[in-house]
Length: 220
Length: 335
Image (cartoon, rainbow over all chains, first blue to last red; front, side, top):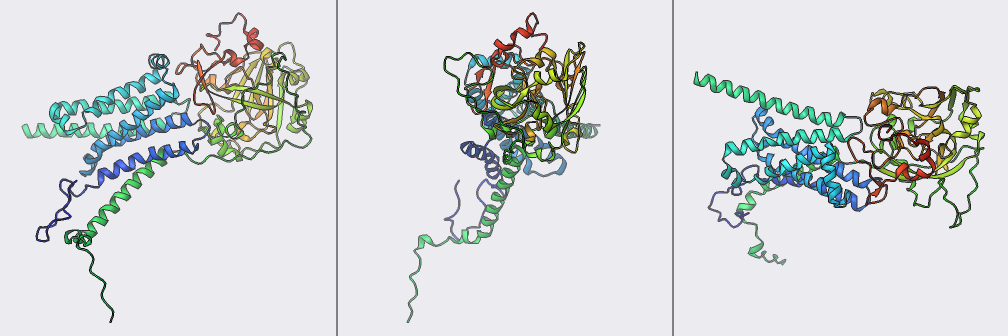
């Protein structure tokens, strides 16, 4: 990024081009968002992940993915409720961080847990609803990540892009269902994420209803 | 007269614009570091893991003698199911990776919470279809039979497994001593019911107390044992102190922990996991690689400490000893 370190004194002092006042925000979110991966790698290298490190790594990566996807879905409702603009600036980064952890989760499952035994993986996906649900979430997330650039948005047009990206809610719901089906008995933790998602969805629906009323009132 | 130092080279002079912005740069750097740290710490706190509990092995109670070390079997010796030369799972793993929901639902929680469980004094009640119903103090009970070391594979229904050197005695010997009546067909076991010692009994994850059961012939099988120790030491609380069941050809959840009641009964007793999810956990719960759990395959397992999975063996590798117990039974129906 070009900075104005060599600007002549007579020019007015301006903030860095394009960064605006919150230029630090996205790099900070990405740095913080990747920190758990670094911590995990470090503890894995030190053999400090307990008796079943592979299960531990998969659980942590899966949970990180779910948390970040839910956080990215919280951006718009937060903006609706508070009027703040900054949540929208980090929405994409949060979603892509979630995708990063989903990929890592799937990769550890396929490479380490299943040793790339393709038949066993295919059997797992087709026969075990719990794996199928998680896999469906992963697949649905791919087009969202692929169309996360400004260029893709322009190419698709805003309306179509927006419709496509509503899939993010479906992916998060699949993530919660995958989590519920994985636990042996106690569903408290996945239920918490389910409840948060339901709350976020409710805010969006209420906002949508309000907007429609407003439009109708303006027309009538 | 002191001379002034030479002026710094012009390249090192902070440009005025930057000099004027130094507060802003500092503030931005602070916001960046603060936000990144908050985000990273928050995520790690939410999804990371704590420190592993440290477990110190308690010696066996006085008066309970360790069995003499058995001489290593000759290479040509007949198959001996009571031990195995497979590498033993380290003590630290055996005692910090447990399913004991009464002490917490996470795998490492029982080790962290085991302090509340007091294995002495402890009384075990024997009742039901026996000629000699009685209540026995645990230290008396442990002197009834010489303790034996048995190295068994332990296969959890969650597809992980361990190799554990248990210390205990065959359940069959105890049942013989209690003299079952002709109506005794099954054995029912219960864990201690005391939320002060087992705090998660205040939650309704399962119906408490934890209950398990065996058919009488399974209970009499020489492989079936009651364990009071592992690795030559007393059982830690998280492993089911002071007395637990070990049935090596069945999934680990059959191994009811911290037993206070053993009853011989006429009808198949209710068992906790079967009551909670009858489609997923049957009364028999024999290790069977071809009978999948509704949510996952049972064909493979990960031995704790291994990276690669290994195929699960029929009856956990004890088929030669126990398959005859189930002759003519459809094990897909009686899972």
